[in-house]
Image 1 (tube, rainbow, N blue to C red):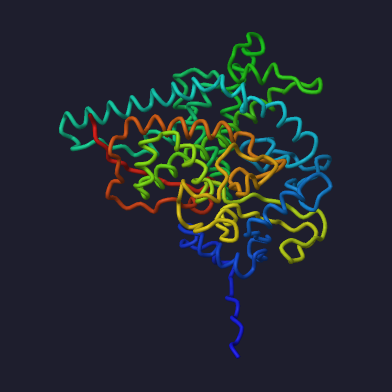
Image 2 (cartoon, rainbow, N blue to C red; image 1 turned 135 degrees about the vertical axis):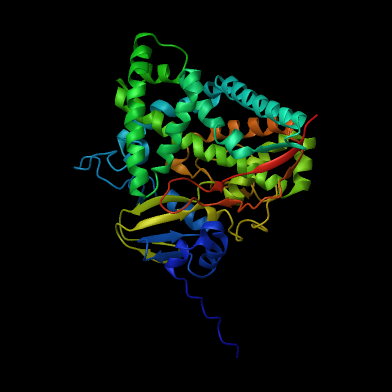
Length: 439
């Protein structure tokens, strides 16, 4: 008789190693196989790793359900925004009518026909930045400084691109775009647990609020077509946004629409240039760039986690989760679940087991195939999903036209990684040097 295979010991400290920061997928797989709802006693959470269990938790996060994103009582003593460098935003609220009102008054600007009105801002911003780095590459080549075109896609384009798009949508002066970028970088670093980063971000938040005060006052007196004007004139259920709410939403737009979008662009190019046959297919048919975006979110999207809290003692994945327990839905693991996706560790824009259509806000299966979990699901589905897709895909198509014969420069690169401990941020490429031919 063959003895049963003994389950490996999974130590919670494995989540905090440098190996896991660089490549979390071996640990994800071990947990999926052996303890799919794993009690991480070190970080005081239940780690949910399988696709179907994650979706089950989403379904049970509806009003009156077993899980909630809210941590604090909306009617309690907690001062919302006091523990966030962004201030009082829908991320801090978690649940309740205030959350639904705040989200509803803004979310419509980033989908459908209203989103179409912002597409020229995206295109013009990308064209301007691409022209700048293309000209610099041509000048370096002509002067003999370089033998070929070269760009660090992160620092010269993608890191700055979505912030400039947001600044343009808000109607901020073009000469202030560099200032806006510096504010964004400081705010995002403060989203981690490092107190020094948090204090710097708080100062940046107050500076941003002071900067926005006269602009909001001007838009209230003289509305234009920009996003701040839409915020000051928007009304829902007879209520309008206060100056403080508008300032907090601007900070949220910076962080929510900046880091995730720029790292999506970087990851798309990192994966394409490491799978050159797929790059060649996209070069021949740029419409495939939309598939690159979708598969990137499944393969290794920027957001690997979404938090929940148990509202009662319940079961999830055949494990009892106690009342009040913190639950970490690991989207990064669910998107690599071999029970759902074939060869999940392979980047493949032509796979037939992934839904490549418009994101499914309240469903995860369509036409017999599964959707990715990169934008979450249900009530907290990312309200900027359509904007992020438009920015990443439009920019990707425009870069295709300029980056002729692109190849990764032969320099050390860890690829897609989590940020250093203590500093806020999401998973992505920290630098991406690309060589290309200059016509």
